[in-house]
Image (tube, rainbow, N blue to C red; front, top):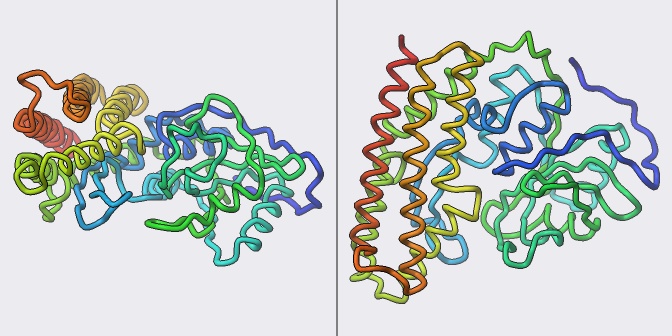
Length: 349
């Protein structure tokens, strides 16, 4: 199916018939919502798995709010690009230097009746509660209408459609700092029919990508090696950084895991849901056996976050220590290694 429309003048009020679904994570949520808009029955978990979203990297040379970056997901935009490519869709991706040109291009798409996704800096979106506002330039959303000077937003991490004044959306699209969005916007150009998609092949590619990156990336900061490296750093932080600085580093770990982009436990739960759904949809019942194991890993990551949070708040019990945080990470690494190896064995069968 080719998505074409004739441009028209943008009316005072325009609402595209876009069905909003709340999601756990913005990029996989936008991906699934866009596909569903064009009749493709894809859940957020399926989009996350096909897009090889699961990942880990500890990158101390990249700073977010002055503290090291820990990421539990793949590169920005990677889920979207891989899902659309593997399912045979074509995407129109644009970035801009001029904010006025970017907003005019958005309006032109809306006037054609096309729902448009944008990458933004979440800090500048006024509908975000103050407690969740931080400078993070990787937040994806869909613009699906305009009323006067306000845009109608399908933001997948919120339960309902939101509105955003044009000046705030412009600022969010051109937020400064690390991974600046540069006005990025994207929409689907062609979408095959559901029965024309090779879903089984897309699932297998998604699984293989995750397993190979987590097991075999040679850089010691990435994948399973990265999890073990971070465990070693946690043991060293109190001596190297002092208690006050260590608490900031640990707090950043929790924030990256639990608040910014769903994080360690949430992404493991999503991947477990993907394995469960894929077992049925592509007739690979063996995947069903590994879904509970990945859920259990997610539980371990959640215990890690709880322990870290209690340490940061000065409420730690006698067994909630930096050493036991490190041991929990090693346990996560051991369990994930076993799952990825078994998944690769199944993909070769």
